[in-house]
Length: 392
Image 1 (tube, rainbow, N blue to C red):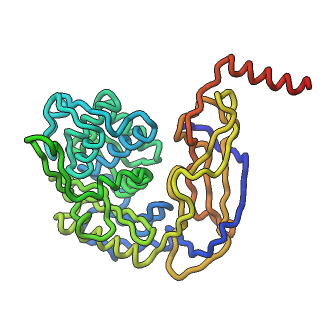
Image 2: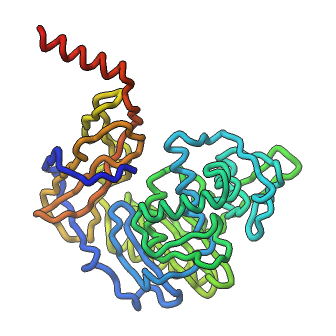
């Protein structure tokens, strides 16, 4: 990601001609004692704005167990989005990956599966072996991938998360929080294809062989709570029962996280109560979809002079039912002096939704393509062309 400070190049205030209610995260949070009473920590957020609707011990560091795989899946989806990985690419399983204990899809050393099949094994079956095989493909080793996980956590501003492996198997100094896990889930859900996997209740691997393997989603709410289509469960003796769940209803997507419930039944009940609360009390008004074009930016020393600026995620305004305000406006802020090279997905600005001087939500704007540094010959021809026009 580009780490330049933002400077205002264009600041456009345009009425979005909508009349919608708004909500303050601090004002509207439920008290901890009112929703989750049988788990170590919990949080409930609205996906598009990140607004916290409910929180209990949200910053307590706890073992995340297999919810760790939310970050693993995030880096896989990011690699696919950036063109570094293909859905149909065959991934070879190393002896080390095949040796993983705990939940697995029983990969054998040397066995190959496509990226799509591996992700199915991770998202539905919580396969530790598939997680490590994908980590080795992307980073060369699991340890290299763990470095990427921790770097991504820093990039997302997650101050209470540290990973030691890709799977969530018990390890010293491997921890996260309900808040941080919700932010990872928020980022993962930018990639809409992920719910095709996490929202599948059952599927098969090796269908055309005598080793046909049945996958059943470890997240039972996918089947029993309408609208739930992810994301990841977790359990170890130390962590107890954990779940990061997401559900969508009437255009609003929410994320609920529970750490340390005593049983799987309790875990599901606590999450269900949070989801019920969110859908009863709030509403989301979508403004932008992901990858919508919003501006053009100038690029210096690139093989192209301009760069398309697009939204990096769905952008909405959260609504508390029954409260109306008018005149929501957008403000676009683009980085100053953008220089090549620029990679697809690099942040090059922000978009804010504003009402009565109050920022309702803020979201990164990103490059829609990769711009390479121009060769000396390209720069020469460009300069010569400008000189010729001036001579005329």
